[in-house]
Length: 609
View 1: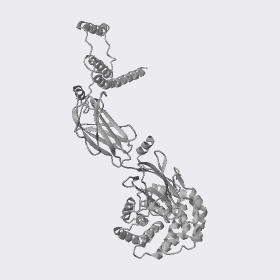
View 2 (view 1 turned 30 degrees about the horizontal axis):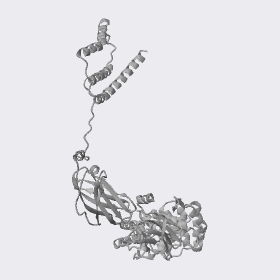
View 3 (view 1 turned 90 degrees about the vertical axis):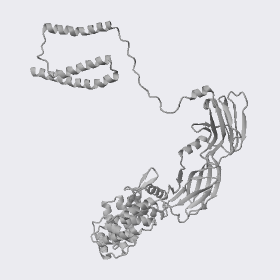
View 4 (view 1 turned 90 degrees about the horizontal axis):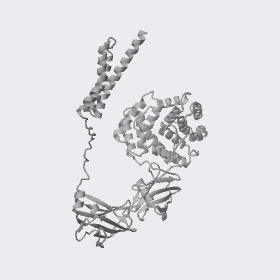
């Protein structure tokens, strides 16, 4: 069990395991990072799409549009909408932004209606353009005319382009056509099947966040059609939450559109999480639970009952709490679970309506020293230890006087078991720690051989330190001082410094062997030079023909001679490293010169043939 606790502690996280319709986290209301994207997008000059995305972000996050953004944005929108020749998608975004910002001013509705109707009547219009044009008409207060014909145009276009994006726009278009839009219902199952599952936890459509948002919001416009189940909705929500770090205006707008649509549907996922910190104590025994939709808003209607089905102590698998209702906190999304339990790790099963969640939490508490005894004894055990009892918070009545032939003994009893207990002996310049061994459940003992552990004469402060990952505050208690008189042998042994730079390591070469006698050296030199002398004598007798000696042979012979000279110097005074350093360039030069000499000889022989 101790190993199990240590493993949980080393993980240093409180993990949440969700099941039955709950999701991992939520998007906080007025999330600063998303609002920063809106502020930056709204400041972009002449960019109608960015103005729409910024306005939509403010709307979905229920954040008032700053005046320094709204006024210039409305001026740009009215100017752009008044100019003819806008693309239908830009017109769609511009009217959407103008409506969200509630811009004051007139727009040429008649011209906009004609442009939208022209798109709806054209057989070349794509499904996205049909969707944009129909939305433009609705935005200016017009009905979509001749829905049956538009539905036929959309179906004809889907035969040539039935991509996920086209199907997503078809969903939105069909929702505007009333009964004429029922053609899309038979395609809904096919649209859902095209979703890609990631690691069994996330669900998205090909194309990323914007495509997933487009398809999801389109599917949810048909609430009477069972397009998605709760498990799929939760996986889509988890995918959206995984993209909360998106930093593009379009991405943030798509994220919030999808989150708002999903949270407003019957399939709204429920986020159940612990309000940080996930730790309770004697001072703050209440564990706060956050229950909301994926946008951090209270679930409507409120889920009930909210009950802690059980709380199990992990150390021994004992159930310590059962069927305890939670009370509503200061916020509608907050519930309170009081946990007046012994310190330890617990696994809690929580039921929120039809949703269940299992999580782990930690209960911490205080630890106190109930009793303490301090004294000295002979290191060889020849006499009984003399121990003095002291109460917590006080110090020894007199300073302890010890020598290198004694042991320091400290015994103390705690109110409960702890993970770490130490005794610290320190001076202004040095310190040493002793781990307290556990004698029984709550009793600890330290025996320090002063001769081995403290071989110096000095006055040491003695402290007891108690810590644990289940303790609110560690205990640090100065119990007194001990004056140690070390023996001369111990002081001598400890005089050698243990810190600081180590002495430099210098490589020592082997001492050269003793040179032979001068007569032997001269004889060896004469024998070595004898062949060369014979060669010179024979050349003198026979005669030397230098006519075939090539100039190309000079570099090679110079290099070869240099190598022989280098070996001579190596024999006389150079070491191996210096010799190798010179041999590399000389050898390379000799090699190249030899290659050229051999090539020259080879060419001359071929020419003679």
